[in-house]
Image (cartoon, rainbow, N blue to C red):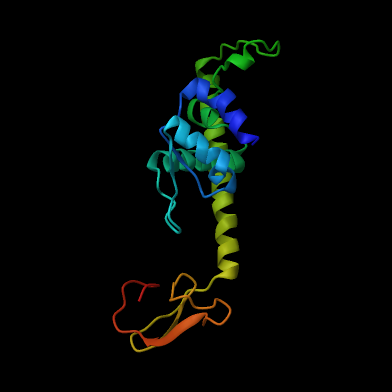
Amino acid sequence: MDTAPLIWNRVVPWTGIFTNIISDRDPQFTSALWTNLYQLFGTELLFPTAYHPQTDGLAESKIQTLEDMTSIHANTNHTPAILEKGWNSKLPQNCFRKELVKIHPTAASFKEMLEKPRKHAVRCMEDAFSYAKDKWDKSHTTADFKVGYLVLVSTTNFKKNKECKKLKDSFAGPFVIKPLHGENAV
């Protein structure tokens, strides 16, 4: 019940009534209250399928952009604006701060101001990639597949006819490798 007034008071005045809502089957959006609201306003509730959450490409694109920006900020401790332009954009909430001082840099210091955050960002990203690679290398080994080898296939995402999960085999096989389709694909 808490979400409905929030959306009605804070979102709908800016966006209008939704034509559809994409939900991950959250009980909050599938309750009787929301079902009645959807019928009342002519809103359609859409559910993504399991293992395929790309129901709404625009939302996925926005989420990917946010993930990229968050990753950049987490690795460099700089905003994307500083890395791209060399300074933060003037935002309305910053207009009333007394600490803001207008600086007129010379050409040399202006160039340095632009290059310094980028160089720092490159170093930070290299460190982050190196850290991630070291962490990956410690826990993963490359499999050496060859034609004729016997392999087992994980059944984690296999759906069989109403089989009890506890009694289901974790792997199927063994299967003989016939052709190779790359280093880790058979």
